[in-house]
Amino acid sequence: MRRCNNSATFRRWPDIYICNNRPLDFDHSAIDADGDSLVYRLCTPMQGATFANPKPQPPNFPPYDTLLWLKPLYNLQNMLGVGEPLRINSQSGLLTARPGLLGPFVIGICVDEYDRRTKGLISSTRRDFQYNVQNCESVTAAFFAPESQCDSLKVQFRNESIGASNYLWLFDAPRTNLTSTEVNPLFTFPAFNQYKVSLIAEPGTACADTFSRQVRLRTSGIEADFKIEVLPCAAESIVRLQDLSTDSTAAIVKRLWKVTFGDGGVINATGADTLVRLPLNVSGTIMLTVINANGCEKTISRNFSTAGVQSPCEGIPDTIRACIGSIVPLNPTGVTTTAYTYRWEPAGLMDNANAVNPRYTVTQSGVINLTITANSAQSVPVPKPSR
Image (cartoon, rainbow, N blue to C red; front, top):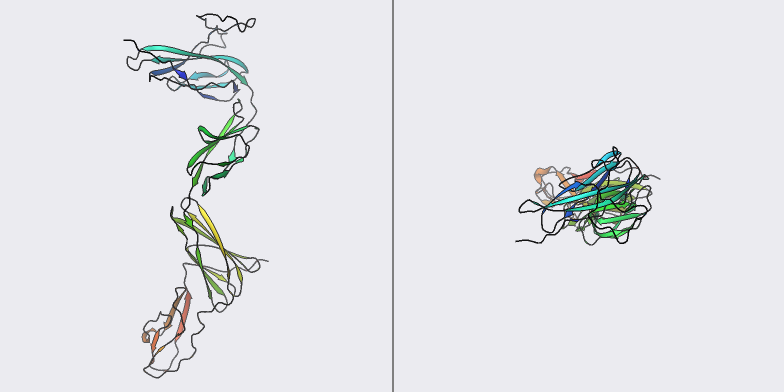
């Protein structure tokens, strides 16, 4: 029983112009609706009309003769004459060459179709076309765009190409569903995802050049927040910075603090819990930038002042009068806090030597020592303000 057959169909048209002394790589593959096996080869082009009668009417009828090569320079294995010869991969249909001679050249490509069941040859499909080899100007495609961007689908692209005036952007390469011909497009992507963006400088010409890079668009769940505690001491203020930020999408991996104060003073710090030493009675701004594992970041800032803040030493009595055997509080107005660590000595006569307000059993007259230390994972010294 006979079955109908679909001939192989080439996917793309080759370029009209190609560059002299530049590599040629062209996908000349075909598709077959029946799933038959396709094998590619170079073939001698057919003779056409004549210069005297380039478009005969009516057209000449087949069969057509193949052209005669101008030997020894041209032949089936060397259609372009000079340079790296034209070759086609028998399995993939990839056409390669590096021409070395200017001018028009006629090219012949054949694809043989073999039955997927019997492996017998069914048909051959031919394409004859012309390559025009020309000298090309130096065109270099290049652009800048952020590799990763968060919480926005709009991306600004900066064109850095050289030697070109026409452009084609493919924002989801190699697909052509998202494109632009602007020089520096501000493009809105359809969704958060990773995209391959390609810029073709001088598209459709032999001088065309392509540059590509990945652009990742992500959503961020960062909720930036922080706490400020001003801890005054005798000669300076210590500001405790505690990051309270959260992120529902990725771990927070970096925290950058910038403390601006007084007349040009700046301190930079890192860490989730940081101490910054500042002069007394200054005001300024604290800025926190939080960065997560996806490279997303968020920044917030708040004003602060070290003026008028009560010292933890205030309210502690210098002298306590009590009878032998009595139990007395040492810091009755003290408020429990995590900002400081208290250490009372001698510790043996107290219920808790590390409490803000321990109870002391009086046995004799004497001196009680108290050391108060500000708590933090990191301490940053104060620099001299720049004026």
